Image 1 (cartoon, rainbow, N blue to C red):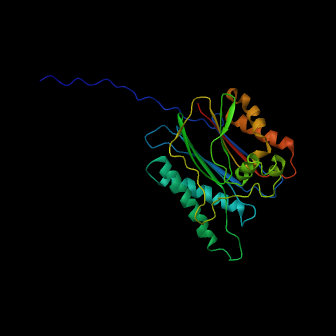
Image 2: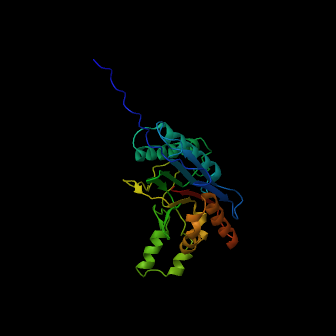
Image 3: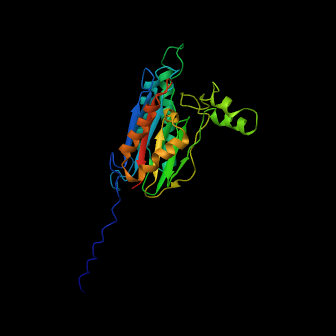
Length: 273
């Protein structure tokens, strides 16, 4: 019997890794607030058998300033989310939802041990998983997730503030655009992580396909100092530069406006290689 002929070695295709600062980066600006109550984290979301950093997790939390320890709440919730995501197995959507519930329960656990006179700790939450061909996300609150592609900027996730309700009133003729823009409750949240059952959650059933050159932006609501059109025009140069320069440019534009009521601003950018 002849010896078996060894099969030729065929290398598996190498997954392209995201490069820090070149493909992903984040920056923060305190604005006119006394404290920075936003918190964010990047994490490697690649599976053990995959190339490191071939998949990214970006989580942004915007602590509620009217509640106890907004900066502490966002820090605790973001870190609890990242840890829980890595501890889970299963589909990405399952892991995102489980991580969100864990972050919420963690805040509830801490609030239950605070003096009864203190309001609950609270934060918004936006988490996005990015690979070279798709993204998935989960969000609660008003922190926006944008996709910029070939000159067009689109918001991907739901806005859980009262802004959509006011805009619907404008559309139906029950309010003027100026009244809606200056309404005192415009930024009141319909949903947030407070340790209680979560009223509204944005978790799409299917991933969104992305392509090389797409720019993903996950931010806190401080970015809304820039109009949609202004941000879209600003990103026009994004295809020809790096993620860190895009974040710097966005925050520079916000600073230049010098709004007396400027909120904390966090901007995270992921460029799809």
